[in-house]
Image (cartoon, rainbow, N blue to C red; front, side, top):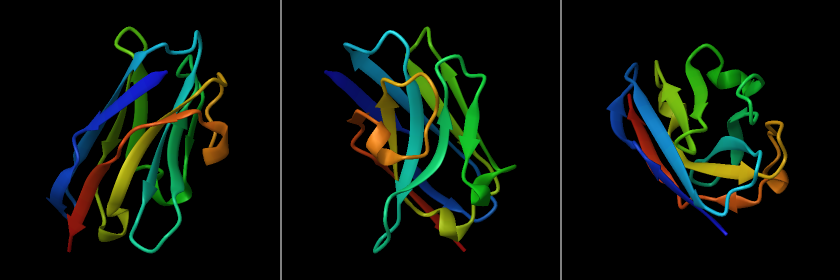
Length: 124
């Protein structure tokens, strides 16, 4: 089993920044990718960003490119999401996830473990 704990969410004004962290513990895979997803009220969960095991390959949904940066520290089993220039449409519950696949994926069904989520609210 793998446990994921997210932190760093909160309330911020439009144009502001937040940094989300997600620490993995337990029996992690030998090489695993990590991703961030979000879900707004009344909407389906969507992929925001993903990073491969090596950190060399990264995926971003178009709406966050040039504003969000995903990174990871394998020594700490932690993935980060730096979010800049936040917009009200970025509001939602942000979840991190771990996949046994070494490449980062945008598809939720390719992830094996999920965190409990952290709320991000961007006011206009």
